[in-house]
Structure formats: C-alpha cells, structure tokens
Image 1: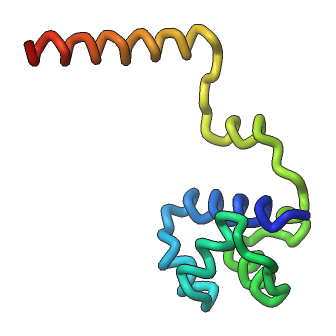
Image 2 (image 1 turned 90 degrees about the vertical axis):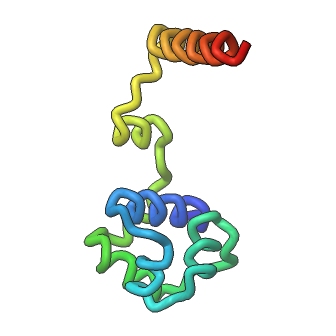
Length: 106
C-alpha cells in the first residue's frame, strides 16, 4: 500500500464531492498543508486514526484505500472517450481554432 495511492483516492473522493482542501481538512481536523502532502504522496505516513476519519467521512471501508487503483477504471469514472477518432477530432478542432485566432489578429 502506497501513501501516494491513498492520497490519490482521497483527492478523487474530495473532488467528487466538490470540496476544497480547506473544507476537507476542517472535517478531518488537520491542516490544509497536511492534506495537500497526503494527496500529493509527499506525506511520510498517515495516522491510522486519521484514516478512520477519512473512511467515515467518505463512507468507505479501509480496504478501499488498500486496493491499487487501475488507471483504466479511473478514466471510466469520468466518462472519457479516448478513442483515436475522438482524439483526432479534438486535435483538429483545436488546430482550426488556433488558425482562426491567428487570422483574426493579422
């Protein structure tokens, strides 16, 4: 179990509830800077008592935080279409938009 994985999951749960780090830090009774270190994988350790608060706040079992995250599953949660066709369409749209801006400034 890596702190980075736990921090990543905490961050995604926080964002899914549209909470700022400050708001969640208050709920967990820690500083915003401590929460930032946890979310960014820079904390050396996470107190077991704190993890109990995190689990209770997000209504998650501790096992949830022990499981390795699968990047493909994370993308599924955001409904991101990463098909080649979709990527090429988006690149084309961005390119055309950029060309239009260049023509407007000339």
